[in-house]
Structure formats: C-alpha cells, structure tokens
Length: 386
Image (cartoon, rainbow, N blue to C red):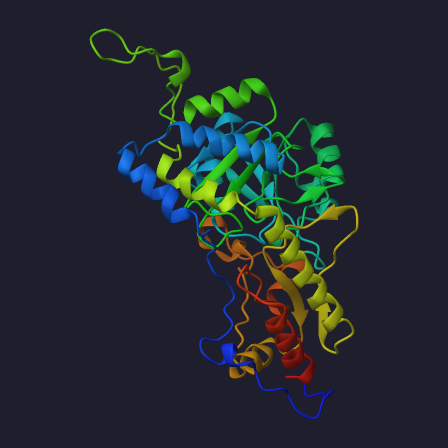
C-alpha cells in the first residue's frame, strides 16, 4: 500500500496541534494532587500508613479489586504473585510474548522458565487454543496479559487451568477499570497485577497493586510485601523492637503514603475520565472503519477494555509512521514480541501470529489530554493515505 486519496487535501491542524505535536502518552495529575502530597510532606510521615490503606479501600470500592495490596510497582506485583503461588526453580509459566519484558523477567527471577504461546492477531492477547499443548508436568501457571487494556478470553483460560491444576495470573498493567462479562478485572483470577506507573490510567508516580482472591494468600501478600513481617500482629515491645518471627522470604515492596496521596487524588473523576477515553475510542473506530490498508483490533461486546492503547494493523507501517509524524502526530509500536530476547530463549518463528503482529501493529495517541478535535485531525491524516 498506500497512496489512496479520499480528500483533496488534509485540513490544516488546529493551532494547538502545531507545537507541540500530538503525543502518544501524557501523565495525568489531578489538580488536587499537589495539595494532598504537600500535606503528607508536612506531616513527615512518608512511608506506608493510613493513606495506603485508604487507597486500597478505594481501589476495592470503586474499581472492584478484591484484596488489593498497594505495592511500589507493577513488576513487584508480578514477582510477588509468583512467589506466593510457590513458583520457583524448574517450574514453567505459559504466557504471550506480546507484552513488556517485566512479565517474563519476573519468571526468570524466581528461577522458572517462561514458555511462550501464540497470540490472537486480532487482539494481541494470549490465544487459548495455543496453550494446552504447551503444558508439561513442570507447568505451574498461565499468565494472561490484557494487551492494551482489552481482557483476554478468561473463561477459556480458566477452563484450561482447572483441567491441569494451574494458577491463573493476570497481568493487568494496562487494564484498571476493565471488565470481563460484567466482572471487574481484579476480581476473577487467582492473582491480578496492576501498574500505576507514570503514563498508566491511574498513577502514583510509580506503583502497583496485587489482588489475591484467596483470603489466606491475600494475607501472605500483605505480609510478604514488607519483609515477611505481619505488621498488624507484630506489636512493638516495651524496649522498642517489633515482635515477629519470619517464616518465609519477604520483600520491600510496599507503597508509600506520599505515593498513595497522588493515587488518591488521581482516583477523583477516574470513571468520568474512562468514559471520555471510551468515547474517543468510538470516534476512532467510526472514523477509521473501512480505511484501505488498515485493520482495527477486535473488541467483543462481552467485555469492556480499559483502552490504555488504541491499536491497529497497517500495511507499509514505516510510511504510516512517517506520514503521521510529518503532520505532527505520534504513532508507535508498543513492544515487539519479547521472545526475541536471548534471556528468554530467542525469537520463535513458530509463533506465527506473534510474528505477523510484530510486522504490522501500530498505535496512535490515546490519553487524558487528547481532545475530540485532535482525534478528528488524526483520523483526517490517516484517511488521506500514506
């Protein structure tokens, strides 16, 4: 492809688009954030405290997360999920390579092996049909990455997991606020891991959360996020030392109160911002339907994406990127399949759909600062051809 023309000329971008260009991502910080964080700084109580508990309570009440433990990163959430699941040396975890390296590097960190299954070209998500034949006696878990915020086929994945006695760990770094068949992501699988990194829907600067459905595993998560010490049941003695007895390895993974203060501020209006994001996606979908050389990613009506990304497949991708850049619009691949890394065993040509995805996937801007007028302009640029 691609030099088709549907209009005589591309409309000049609105003044606000000339400088700076329309970025792929921005970081949303609520106007109340400075005041909330300032109050924490003035209190001088900066570590994990009441604000972390309040943040966790709101994640549960407003986003439907079950037993959310606030952590210092989404990567910490993934690692802690594997540890609490008892996954270690000699074990295997099946996952899709369409993700960031954090998903697989934590598997290596616990001494296990990431086993890559193919994806659905139409979604970027793990293909349930390519899982079962990869299961061995060493397989302990399936990690389902919700690519771009669009939930995986969880019913099919759970059915496979039940047949083989496997854990299901959702990597929901892109998916706070998403739902699957009416159920909130964070309330469905054994473990669900979220990221609150700077450009995610909800940021604490950097941070994450881990949901464990089983109450006993949830207690273990809360204990092991702070060295393995059960703070709630380890009183400080008269001589000033906390009384505890470590039984397993823990980590310094807890969130701080000043990060939680930023998160709490950014929780304000979250659902309204998500509604607006979804409206922009509908605008994109309507405006780009039927454009030659372009295929939108699939969205089924039984689930609601969190829409962290707006992705598509295009012919002549480099020309597409250059055409948009020339008109002041960013466009970017967001992660080629991570199986190409030597650490994970090198690129697997048998993952046919992943290799196709690597060649044609592209994403255009989608974030809280994006306006409907800017989306109209981006659509106009794309429909002009490349």
